[in-house]
Image (cartoon, rainbow, N blue to C red; front, top):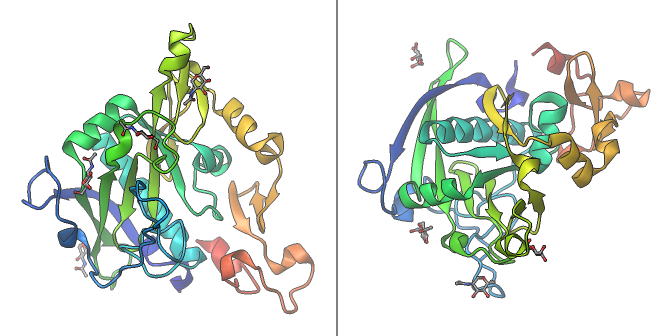
Length: 310
Ligand SMILES: *[C@@H]1O[C@H](CO)[C@@H](O)[C@H](O)[C@H]1NC(C)=O
Ligand SMILES: *[C@@H]1O[C@H](CO)[C@@H](O)[C@H](O)[C@H]1NC(C)=O
Ligand SMILES: *[C@@H]1O[C@H](CO)[C@@H](O)[C@H](O)[C@H]1NC(C)=O
Ligand SMILES: *[C@@H]1O[C@H](CO)[C@@H](O)[C@H](O)[C@H]1NC(C)=O
């Protein structure tokens, strides 16, 4: 019985990907939204009246979900398996398309520890180069990428999962556009979870002042060219990814040295033997009586033994 591992973990992600747009071919134009929405009665977008210029709207119930595709938050296990599939489908698609992308922020920290998304993380952060965002905007806006998932178990049904790539029309605006900091999203059309995609840009002001290496991102992060390039090749969630060159310095600067050494965090413990973050179990607290791990509203069984077998 592995039900509490969530739906997708019973499936092997197949690399068979189909791309669709409104005309059923590789899109060079936009697909009408009604045609890509799987469950049309879900409409939980927070179209914030105070920010009419904002392009992407999060859901009314959480900033980590797209309200057009979701009406509720997933539980801990469902979210983890959905984020894993989100990352795997994103990187395999970007590899196919030939877009230059790399992981950053919390995802890079997860990579550092275990080559996986941190189990308590609510999202995935990636960056693309300027050339790549142009390419994605010109040829792949609103494309839907469907992956077939082959069941791991004999009696399990095969199913498919669709992801939509949406490019913010404000991506061409290189100023610190505070309501449009996210240049694109890779959205799971069944759960509403998404990957935020930001563009690494040249800082033309700094370059004019004689600093040719200065780079910027609309979310106000600053980098030097050689913090990021040349990208290093690695793996994340079992797939080939690229990571920024000076990853350790970037992580230290963003999260502090403790984030690279503390093995207890957010009700999880880093298990050196497994090389993975595991949710604290009652043994960690010394008593199993009335034990409840408060992670994300999900109470784990008192013994985490079943979990460790997988
Ligand atoms: C699922 O797909 C696999 C591989 O294509 C196939 O062998 C299997 O019979 C399929 N299972 C079902 C229930 O259709
Ligand atoms: C992508 O398509 C959507 C939906 O048609 C549109 O609103 C948006 O402006 C497009 N983005 C770009 C970069 O053209
Ligand atoms: C770029 O974004 C800024 C900040 O939102 C806005 O003031 C400016 O008008 C935008 N420029 C263009 C060309 O849209
Ligand atoms: C670009 O560089 C200038 C000069 O170093 C700096 O003042 C400015 O904040 C940078 N702009 C962005 C958007 O990062």
